[in-house]
Picture 1 (cartoon, helix red, strand yellow):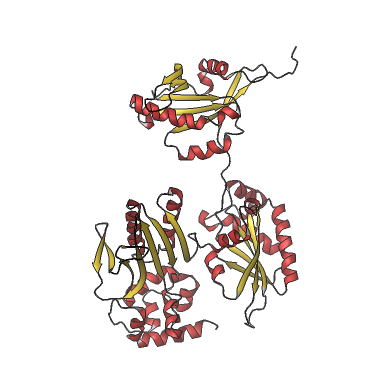
Picture 2 (spheres, rainbow, N blue to C red):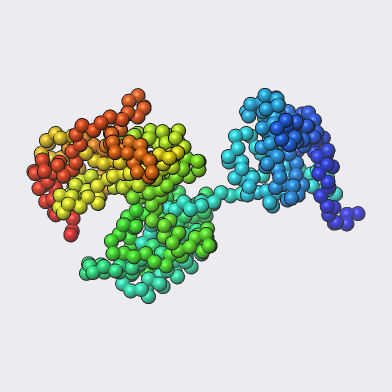
Length: 510
């Protein structure tokens, strides 16, 4: 008769011996080679592989067995050591062996195993070992790991809700939290915005912006269940379709005086609008990890690829941060002529120097609006530019990117210039600027150039400045013979300047 009493987990040595006779629980067609296989180490601690086997393809299989949280914490270190020793002692390549981590408990091991598995360069599978009431082996099931978090990746499509007074804004903020709770949307930030300028054109000076973390697969699935008619077809995963559905739900349910859709870089640059009282929820809810200042920095997007005003500092010694910065930089300047190829080569060189690099990029991809502001009042604040500084050993230098003119006169009207690319100014300003900008610059004799200072010391760059170019994929440095800036371009093109100012006056409500 069964008493229902559960026997405790047997000793690891007993489990090891039983598992060695039932390797089919781990995988079919495994052949036992040895239990507690000894691995000598002339330069440190030796070790014993719990079970060494061979699979049906002939590859070696390491099986590491753990039965408690205390011993599970040692498992990842031991696997790394065993793989290294087998490679050294037996001359094995990494692709010639596989590893299984088998454990009766994954309470302590789950999170570190999930992260560890993403980064190792060998085959690794986790297995959960189940025992019956008598403590005998019952079955093994693959442990797939813990769900990955979206982390602090924010959706770059921000929802703004503007109101005539602060009471209505605060009431809407409470409704947002309640509605998102009901929809099981957990990870987001709500920040107040207040207009503090003197413009009489602002009708709704109080608002909130709602910023989501990029939805995980599980959250996207939840959105599909809630709104099947809106998720039958998702045309482009990069459009943040599921996040937009929830934003639409907010606008349809909550009273809003004016809806604003915005992006990280633009929100951060809005004049006379002050952001305050950011509040994080879900993964952003811990005020120790995410104090208000950190939340404000996060939603500014200054260190993400979703802004036109990008800044960051990264060292080649910090591989994840360096890789992330390079990806972001490549995205931010992707439409800026020769900048991507030149800067990527310069960053490759920085890796060889084991450098630390500070990046500041402004890339609006809207050359006409930048020239218009320059012509109207001498304001260069909308002209694309970049500065990268690097430190290595005791040396440092800078690269600077700017728009330069080749000196050729092409003085035609703005209408004629836009006609060459098949659009008018309204088309250009409402979404086509980044598409047609390369052709416009070519027709005007403008290009994205990069110059570099010579190497200096004591935190000061050298005095010599050379232009960077590429030859057969390699960086080439040459003296700058003549560099004409946009002021000189405007002085040489009076017809273009006059028509540019006139067209902006007709098109934009000032």
